[in-house]
Image (cartoon, rainbow, N blue to C red):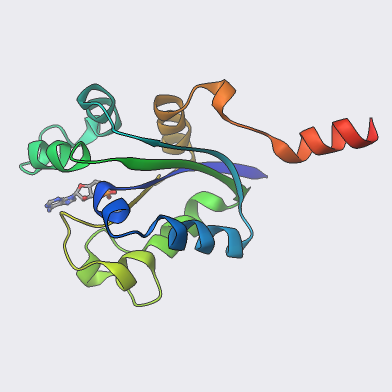
Length: 150
Ligand code: CMP
């Protein structure tokens, strides 16, 4: 079954010019890009996105960091994309992330860990609904088929 997940290049990832590298890895793996935008995330959006972390000591610095610059939010689709993208991203703490993973290759700081990936299919659905309107997601393979063949 086709899943979708929310991938976001965090402000440090955009500043470090990692957007292209990250897109390349997801494309090369064979996943399909169905939504993408560059935005400065509002505190309101981030509060919803991180509502599970509200009681953590690092919560306010996390919101400050995530709103400190633009984020590139993307929706990727494919078989098992939620679990596979977590493996491609690596552990939350970059010091635990293996070389070859995005965090393992490009970061050393848990407070600047480059990228977000949804942690479950349900979580992905919730997060995609926060970051994207349904008309911002493009099911481009079926568009091509219906235009060409039907
Ligand atoms: P992520 O797993 O994408 O989403 C939650 C984020 O909170 C996490 O990435 C880190 O950016 C941040 N985070 C998690 N644990 C800590 C921590 N112990 N200290 C600071 N930031 C953290």
